[in-house]
Image 1 (cartoon, chains in turn blue, yellow):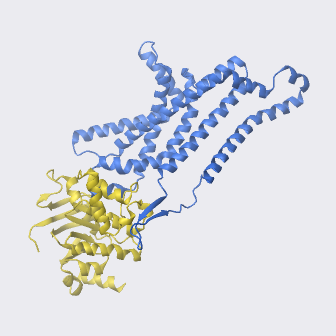
Image 2 (cartoon, rainbow over the protein chains, first blue to last red):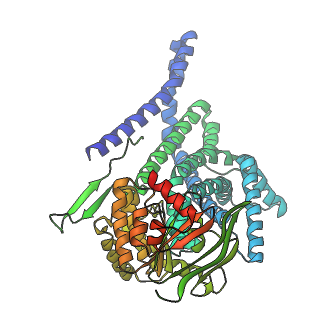
Image 3 (cartoon, rainbow over the protein chains, first blue to last red):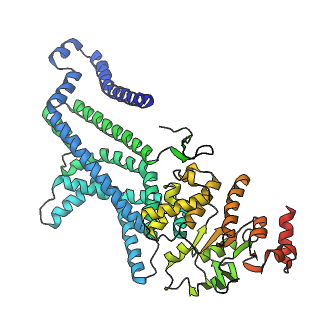
Length: 305
Length: 247
């Protein structure tokens, strides 16, 4: 327990320092610039940096909160959907070809389609994909557009899916061949093996990459403002236009993005530890006492966090 | 010696690219027999075993299981593998499962046994290999010898007709070889049909009913242990054993 609370304490101290540092940086530079000009008067007539920040935070927080909500919604759903796409394509691509000629043909065709999908969506910027898909739909339907948030989710999902496809495929082929053979030797089918043996291990192994994708998505949803999706960055634009405080606004948004990604990283780290399983196990019975239950704790060599 | 063989291999050939690994293998194993396969590394012993379990597809020849070609459509591959189990050099336990789960998953998924029945059967065999205390442990928490004993229990839990052992003690520290061999000796004495690819000559000599010597992808000699180890008919067998015991 002691270690746990110490950990949380350290985390918040770090967060605080990071926020402080980020906000202090411009003040210092501003102060240096002020020193050059005539300082005394300007300070009186114009509100200072902290006042501006405070004003934006207190007056515009509904917009900021809505932005955070939308950003998190799009990136979370997008990442999960992307992971599902990745799982599906990964399983299809690593499955052995059927002996049935027709099935084998479609399987190969599907693999080709998946490769093309992965290459295209990894090889073009998400901002451009957003424009092409959103306006492409409008073009094809003669002017009608898709609702924005679902469009955003769709674009992030399909883009993340392309990356996840490779992450999952890598996760599956990195599993020792012996795991497949062990399962085959007791008669398990490929599907049963994937479901009970391989995928659980893959999930644990790829979780760091998945959380990485999630963090990237939190930041990269900001490009969706090009089609007008109302996420955090979009609202920053609105606030800027209303307050004319460009720097203060984007600094606040910057700190918010950092807090989001940092929190998500830490939470997923915890999940990783959970998935790694219990470090201890119980031995039932001992030489002197058959009813004994001995807890054995495995020593982990230096866990880095 | 019973009459009808469980496994009958005729003219088995296996080729990896241009490399001929198995050439015209003929072997039959009947119920209750313990056949040890010995020979230098690269002689094709393991490949033969893997062909029997269809982890490798034979290039030519036939492997009959109770008279049915195992590569044919009449042979239900999953059922076949459940009844002709395999124990690997590298154990191949499922890393994401406890020792107990390793022994129940196949029973539940392949044999469609109930969870309770699967657990009961698994416990019977885990007790037999002396691993009942460790049912809760993951493979990463066990020693090599312990892992191999769990792997044997996993195969036994499928109620197999026959077990294939692919160098089961080769990846073990010397002090752990004994615990695994003890289990295997016990299984042999209980009448389990086994094909054992091994470098443990004492085991081959004392436990097996027949010993097969392989070299360069062919079976050089197939006889009872007393002949193979005392006065082998093939000079190659004699040379191998001499080299082996000289080391």
